[in-house]
Image (cartoon, helix red, strand yellow):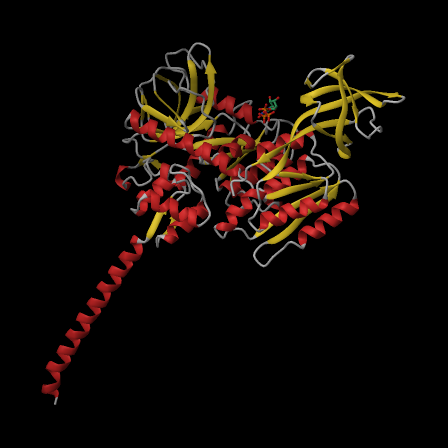
Length: 621
Ligand SMILES: Nc1nc2c(ncn2[C@@H]2O[C@H](COP(=O)(O)OP(=O)(O)OP(=O)(O)O)[C@@H](O)[C@H]2O)c(=O)[nH]1
């Protein structure tokens, strides 16, 4: 039995293995196919790009778009929703990689350099603390005593950062921008520069609000702290009291059994300062700071300015690699070849290794503090990335501005991405605000929910625009107007403000938009603003307003609206428009005029008259 079973078992095992192999192969092929169906795109591809990514003709893409109700041209960039829907039609799943990621992937910043290529580098230190606690004095003392003066004849310039050498020949680089605001501003730009923070606390004072803030900022950034208790030479100094205050904040210093190093110092006598530097180096040692000096450099901009004689001068900190005169440096969307380089004591140098601050000439613009720089191999490469970055910035600005509009509803609905309409309602009286809000709420359907995120009586203000911008809302105004600053902000933020005088119109337009049927309509275009400066009551004629055209122009046959305190008090027509004694057809901004309004004699000084025309507006959808 055993004997007869054996070959069978062997055959079965072989068969199982074969089947397993076949299954695995099948799965692999399936996975490969699935992989092939994933389309990696940035959010900003055009219909044309998309067609070549999917290997179909652009006409096919465009006709699919049309069948989905999107009218796109070949080079029009598509948004994420549109790309997903179109790709889906062609059987692709879309995976978005951010455009930044794609651009930055073209830059090798040495993150993946081999361990054996790395060498120790000097720590980079920022000093922070409360006002007047002695940050500048400490920096000055260190600089005076520890900067190698060299042949240039001492310290000649301030470049925002400098390197010092301790007694035993080790280096520390200080950023000469004391204060946590500068530190955090740099971080906000994505720069991680500081390795160790020294927090200065005056021993004759206390832990102050800014001390706490500085500690928080350092902690949030995950940067180790060394405390310097300054001014210990002063009569009232009591470092022990500071230690206690820190302990109360759960910050135990080493002499009290905690993990924070602290050093008493005097920037007057220099007492304790070498020890402080020693402690900073100890902290740095724990961080095992390394860089590869044998690669193209990268680092961070510390300061930049425009110098009359020399052009753009930038202080940059080399964080990795070695920077050389003649290198092509790329910063943000600027790039240029380094014409000259000086160190922190003003000496001309030809190259600078990791943790070295240098001043460079040759960039064609002023980068901002905290911008990262990279040395590129060729000018072409630098130009390509600079161009892409510039384009990205432009597109992102456009993208952030793209807010919902009534026209946009139809388009978003067509691609199935429209679920909610946020509305801010402003009106002249409580009754109309409530009535309009209620009616708009009732427009909610199963597909689209209308949310009134804010409603109030009064003019449309800047804060309404900001709210709309933050929550992608449209603003519906009933018999009210935006203030001038709100109007400007709305333009900038691309917020749609819809103004109505008839509730029924407001409701109908929103309803049509939600049904994706916003027909070509007649829209009001405001062509001028006029200020009423004087009012004359003339028997038989009625009220004549002495006006000044502040913006645009007013035409005799324009319709007008009389606005008082941002509320519409009358809409109608002009019965007479005059310059001095003459009837005129139009008056432009900067000129005075006299006018009377048909069937309305209640014009008052201070009123604004808005002149508007009715224009047929072609809806794109
Ligand atoms: N006696 C003594 N005075 C000091 C010491 N350190 C700073 N001072 C004095 O304290 C005052 C403030 O010092 P700064 O170094 O300007 O303080 P800061 O923190 O840089 O101040 P801001 O830049 O305004 O935030 C100055 O009058 C210094 O001379 C010290 O160790 N001993």
